[in-house]
Amino acid sequence: MNIDNYTAAALSAAINNGEVTAVDAVTASLKLIHNNASLNNFITVCDIYALREAERIDSEIKSGKRFGKLLGVPIAVKDNICTKGVKTTCASKLLEDLVPDSDAEVVSRLKSEGAIIIGKTNMDEFAFGSANEYSAYGAVHNARDKSRVPGGSSGGSANAVAAGQVPLALGTDTGGSVRQPAAFCGVVGLKPTYGAIERRGVVGLCPSMEQVGTLSKTCDDALLLFSVLSGRDDFSALDGNVRGKTIGVAKEFLSSECTDGVRKAFEQAIQALKSMGANVIEVSVPSFFAGLPTYHVLSSAEAVNSFRKVIKAYPHTELLGAEVRRRMLTGAVVTDGSNYDELYLKAAKVRTVITADYDSALKACDALLCPTTATTATPLGGIIDPHKSHMCDSYLAPVSLAGLPAVSVPFGSEDGLPIGVQVIGKRNAENEILNIGKALMNNAV
Ligand code: GLN
Image: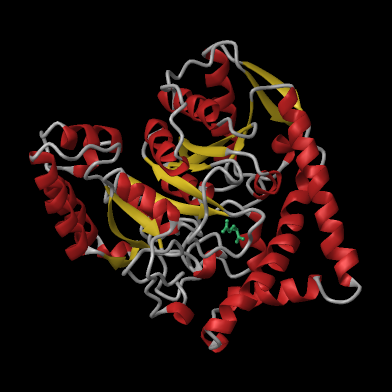
């Protein structure tokens, strides 16, 4: 079988009704992972575990004992999400030998619906980064163009879906780490509402922003995976109908820097929504440009605080990479002495303004639309300037500060590289934004 021809929903249906076995699915997935090992999407591949699990599921299906929303579906899990008995390194040398003795809540939920953990994906060390180049286990090569980055920090997860190795993957998103690699790799990346998914067992460093997110080929699969992870069953099937919906475009989104190709794709996305009967209105998010610096002050401050606990258990900080050190230093500086008031507290106050601005823009419409990133996937080794690398999160970080759900869907391309468009919703409006995302993908240029 060719696993790349299946969505997760179709694969699970085929396994549930006996057309395909879980062993077939796992074997096909492992073959693509090993044949394309040079992409470096995985830090650990769970060959033996996944095949045994598939055999067990197949025999339970035969005896009529097993059903599940993700039955027999191979799934890749970012390496900062704990997996029982399987190394969880956070792409850091510091945690090279960490083997958790229990699963993260999200992993337990996946397993109870019959999903099979196929491996742990590469990422930026401790999820700091936007290119996956800050991994202690080597860079990831974008499946569309191996000389380019997949984005980050969930680069391995997005790229594994893009390469067809798995239909689904888990990522985490604190300031864009699911949505940005989704855009660079040409897949769907959902960051749910803050708090929508239980985070127990996720090695997170920024507790006020971090969320587990989904990577998939379609919006329907994102909804399916989100329903498993959130334990919610109250969603309606996506029909891709946006007639009568109001979509807001903030004028600040249009004045932000982006490449010609990204701007063109974004304008085409607006046209596509109009042609499907949506009303597109102009709104304003005056604090938009404050989002990125505010994010960096707050996320670094939270990270240095959370890291104290990690360092107690794993004191060999000399094993940490340059970007993690930079964040720790930033976090220490912004909370030190009088900086605490001038930088940290100020940023915390600006955050409330940003949140209020997004909320008020969303009062006038059903969802906001903007590009996901300002550029397409950048060349490997190309980001030497950490400031430039941080800049590519300007459309993403403010959404995280506001705790809103957002999805990046592939829409158009520039020089053969995928472009992402971001749909931002009201809190708990995942169903709505995924439906708008589906409508866009149905009309992608
Ligand atoms: N790219 C952003 C950063 O470097 C986001 C990271 C994340 O969401 N984990 O901080």
